Image (cartoon, rainbow, N blue to C red; front, top):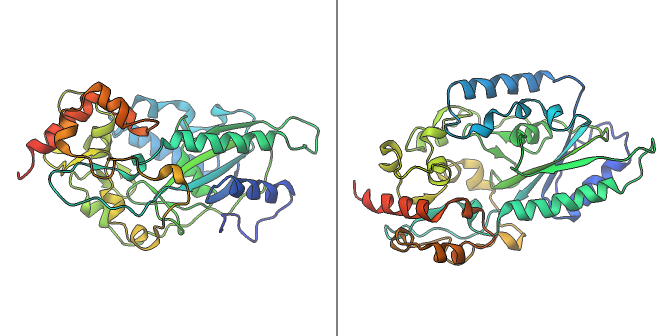
Length: 330
């Protein structure tokens, strides 16, 4: 299994190889390391500037948590941090959505078991293992883990760790699995040799920008949540979806994979995952819109057990499905 540690990296810490081996043993498909310096690096400062510009333009919509100051400086998340162990887990399955107006569309990330639960279990095991290792200085090894649950710029750090590169659609693309990966991090006070940052390989391709029906990708790497189908179907709590999204819903009721489906890297390198928990729950690949438009609270509870899709409340499912049905043929 390929990893993200450059063969030319100065491996001065013998624990590094064991960390990589343990991460792979736990099932992670990619692993890399970022060394955190006392002061932000040039790359970090660039990330901070871009994030602040994105916020200043209001592209976060109602996601106020994106403005948390800790997101711009990992040292505020964990003052003792010296290294970030970044991991990726492939979630792609071979299933395909039927192209029929009676069915709603759900983004692949939500087809199976809640990725937070799967990632957190593995990250916790990695963190506990790391904390149990002897330290040369006799000091306790600290470890704190995240998987889309804290103020951490996971895609930026994954790129710095060599897992892949942040693409024009804002997703991280890996050479081995495309962008169908979940990302996680273990922050530690243990100094480790750094991996080589990944280079960008989008080239002149603009398929994701061209394919987005709402023009949510305002510029390469700049996604405006207020125009994004995924944001509105998952995060928007309003009674109605805005017309510029509703008119282009095309049966998407939970997230959106358009910019990933058209990506040449995904078309070429996507491969089925070996993580059984990511196999789709019944009905998630092809849910009927009429059923979702009349979904009761009890049916919602039964249909989405241990699922990331529980973030979409029953009223939102009914709204999304009803909107999709109302806009068919327009």
